[in-house]
Image 1 (cartoon, rainbow, N blue to C red):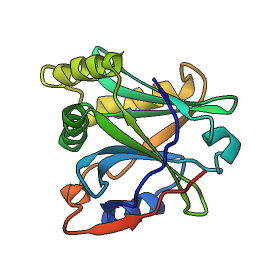
Image 2: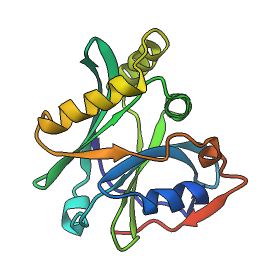
Image 3: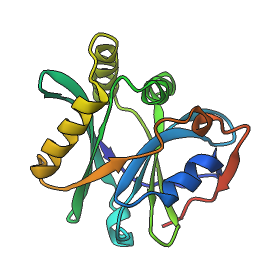
Image 4: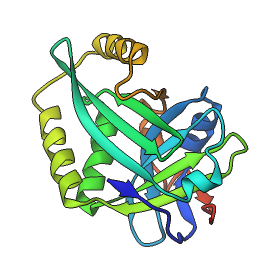
Length: 198
């Protein structure tokens, strides 16, 4: 699915989430909630080691997801391809309840945000409606989460194996901000972002 940037309002995210995301070592990624002044939906945040050039983000990016089978256990795979630049991979534990909550919200709203957070703490934001093919695929993968499990140890082994030989080649990001339910409470811990305009 291809994403492009549009004009966005100020956005409210979780202050604790953003604090800990910024404290994590890049490259890393995380999933959370965002409010646009009208409704709440999910977002995926990517924090690269070096800034993604403005002319690259202006072209948008391609977002994909799949379930990888490692040792017979499922691992959720996200991929973000920035044209003529690089591909960023993120692997998550499908049984993680916070991941499930955010993806359920994305499926309900058929909408999500993507944030690219640069080392200088500027944020480039994208918003997209989930297309039919991505909705079907994400919903199918979500349904599989209920029936299959992957232990944290199996997940760690999967990340190590994938990092040695990512397919397609690209950067593998660490999954962060995944255990504290306070990260999803944007009413109690609000932080306003003014998205970068291209």
